[in-house]
Image (spheres, rainbow, N blue to C red):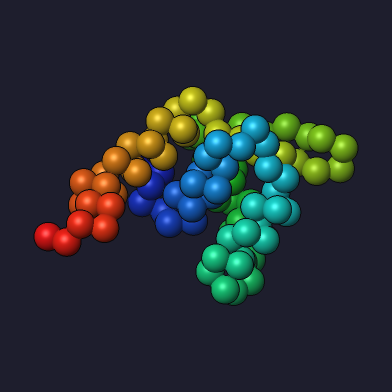
Amino acid sequence: MKWLQSGRRRDLCVLLYGDDGVPAQKLKTALERRYDERIDPKQFYGALEALERLGHVRSRTEGLSDVYELTDAGREHVEAYAAWLDEEVGCGERR
């Protein structure tokens, strides 16, 4: 799953999972808090555009905000990623 090779793209999809739409600025703020650093807007929107181009995310305009949500394909990839993490990390089980 090539889209998961980018941590930022992966993290954006994780943040979108389970939501019916998140404004871009709220996503950016959530990532900045997670990373504890400012994210360049060009890089942030580039990641969103790549996800949209690949069919994992769709956007719409609500008022003055662009709102993003996962597509079914994006949701499936997040679930596959979570399953892989569960296999490798084992939900707290030590190897």
